[in-house]
Length: 333
Image: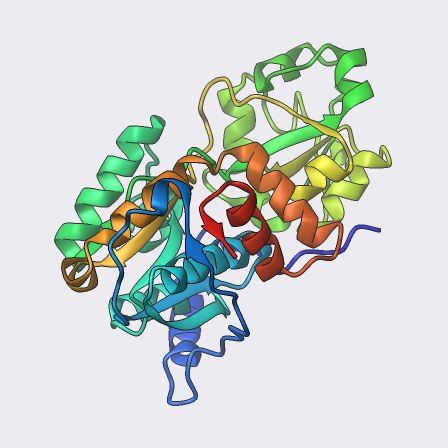
């Protein structure tokens, strides 16, 4: 049985939503987190030589959806195992609250996404298609403006995509978004959520990039607007041929969906990176050494598998994080 995952990050933060979230997230009542217990092990493998953090206090945060909590728990476990005194503030409700906590120094470190940083936090309107160039731009801008350091990113890219059933992909001969133009109009049906349908970098601009016009090549009657969590099941049951998905969602694996390649690089890049306040990194520079080999292992398929263990199999994020770190030889115990 597939469980609905925790609410995902918003891809765009409105002014009103930002103000409300900041107010809720920075009051005297705290960040509203639910950190819970995280195990501590012994650093192993490529991390065995990392210098101890000697009880240095470090506040670690995450947003409140599955992938973020799993990644946040990994960071908590690694820092604890390196000897830091970790304040676990994972599971913060909302991107805006998490970001403001980092800006104000309530958080010292958290995983973030390059696309979120560039578009939602730094106010840029045009994503950069090249992953490295996008990372470099976010890294340089946020360091200059906010003294926040973006450590080298993971290869995982949790961005928008479209998926279909494996048998449908084989029958229609589609592997890329460019192939949509070859699909017969009657089969060219889509499920999207309301936000994506209205975004300036969403559904209609995507169609235009790939040579299709909404209202002509894709009539309004061929598009269903569903809640994000319902789209995966709708594609699997044949309610629509193609559905909007996120590339590291565990339901892709659970339902064995085929993800179409974004061969014209339309969608923004959302590579994950640990962001650390410059002041804290100056105090304990070995944090970068601690994170680098772990981030390098986190590709799309790894996150699909880890997310599925939570959202499909019902495991706890902290257990998934701990098991993976042990299996990869980063910690023992």
